[in-house]
Image 1 (spheres, each protein chain N blue to C red):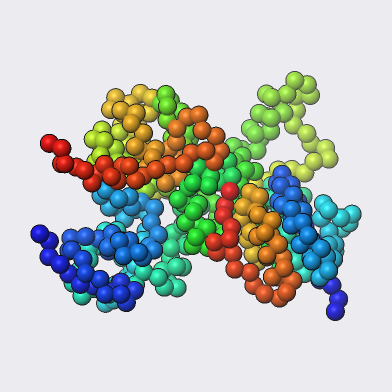
Image 2: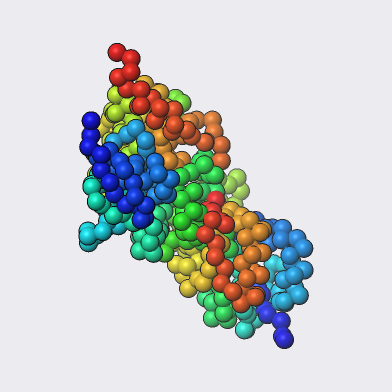
Length: 236
Length: 176
């Protein structure tokens, strides 16, 4: 049984089990912390940097998803500084790839687009990079559009941790980073993909989608996958 | 009190944002009570006038004419608003940016053509290397994203600006 600890989040006294992340505890108590790479039931990697929070006594902001709660901690989830940094993080995501929302399968259902609206990102202050990157349409049912990928790695984790196939990985570094299928095979030539579609449902943007969907038609659901992870070990 | 001067301009876009301006419906009557519309596709003016208070710019900056016009607009406008995703992000016009201009024109006018196998050169402005959002070319004071932006959002911004207030768009607009 993990030890019970007490902390304050935005001044509110909260009791929680240790070994849990600030993000999990805050969300359970109705706080809003934006995030894109977090998905309930998957491991946390701190990729998107949107869930940053301030912790009293710590001189830098910390990602809430990878920082465990500690006894006596005082966490701030909303401040001018955090709002500014979160906007910057979002704008950098937009400038790094070609997010043409108007013609995207996920327009209107996209978590990136939704967070931009919610956090008041009405434009991107950085020059767009307009990278020339491709689309993989070789899978019989599913599509990968690198132009929309934010490298959150939810697909990587859901495939490795839930489906157990580990089809996806990220290759290269920095702005050259790309989602790759099995050491850079075409998706249609994958030997491990079970075509389960969990990666598609986990993807917060239009980067992974199903074939046969037009603009605005690809809505996704992560809850069934999160429920599945909660049932781990329930049936021997 | 003299009326404010409002202009609209249509660069590399589909005119959908101007359709959304017209969709303001009866709010347009409120606008013209407070302002004269002095330039744009909706009025017959040949030259962008001096001393404009508010200009709504639709479309990306894609060719030499767009570039010259938007620079002139900036020098003659107090408040420049990027209207819609093409002006704010580059949007659909920017989808050509991964392809060099020469290859792009060859594909459209040579490979894709049945007759006259050459790109047009007379009477059309030269394309820029990239279709750019307006703020990468001149200073932009406000952005209204959307493809097209909702008429309500445009009406809100225009009426706030004409009333001397600063519009707050958080939660009111989205890309796409």
